[in-house]
Amino acid sequence: MSVPAVLVNMLWCVPGGVGGSEEYLVRQLLGLAEQPPPNWHPTVVAARGLAAAHPELIAVADVVEPSFDSSSRLRRMVGEATWLRQHSGEATLVHHGGGTAPMRAHLPYVLTIHDLQFRTYPQYFSRHKRAYLSAVVAPSVRRATVVAVPSEYVRESVVRAYDVSPDRVMVGPHGIEPTLAAEVTPAADLRRRYRLGEGPIIVYPAVTHPHKRHDFLLQMMREHWTDPALRLVLTGGEGQAEATVAACADSRVLRVGRVPPADRNGL
Image 1 (spheres, helix red, strand yellow):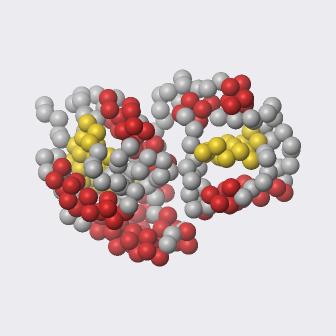
Image 2 (cartoon, rainbow, N blue to C red):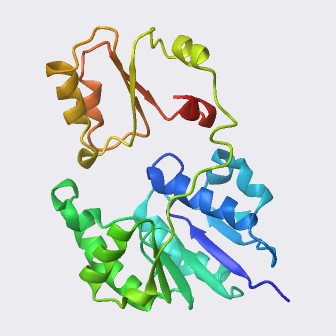
Image 3 (cartoon, rainbow, N blue to C red):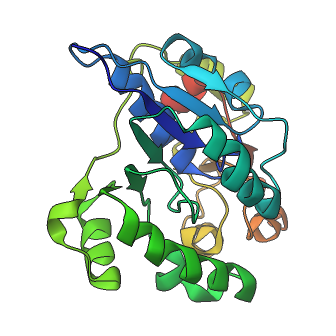
């Protein structure tokens, strides 16, 4: 039995710039390689630098990076309409993992929608980005053979928002790496490396976007969680509310950014 040629579009996935969806899609690809035969080995067209950030992908997929930089949305859209279309001609199925598909996307395709934040929290998006997402998400959903989502809540949101048949929207929960409990930095090393002291620790792993409500945690530290030994450890990439976190003068709040997987697991 021949294995269908699957192409996964991750041109949108700028390493360190898209939050948890980066880890979600990488985990899905690693999990695909663990499935029983047929032995899936997709081609991943990836934003520049993604393979270097996740070298484990090289063993489970053919990773192809373009000459253009995906950090520019306009440049990426042009690349998807031209370069990606040329590379997807031989594919039996294409997976667009970033919530949108190009207007002239190769068919059939699967579309992953991680959330509908631009509809739920429109105040956190610029007028231009809201207009862009409003224009492209709906037709992307309509043309998709299957829409994949990470939770039942997102599934219901997509069905309601775009009047799509529930049979076409399927939940694929966030996976957990088998190394989560195996690759763990010892607690003593973490306390020393991040200057955590000997007291209790609260860890919040989230990009600093406004809807993640880092400001609420900072308020709690200021007004209620006053134990001098307590440490609030904020991991994750920089978002639109980074300045709010950076302005915090409380030495008990530790903004450590993205950390190695073993440190993340240990924390």
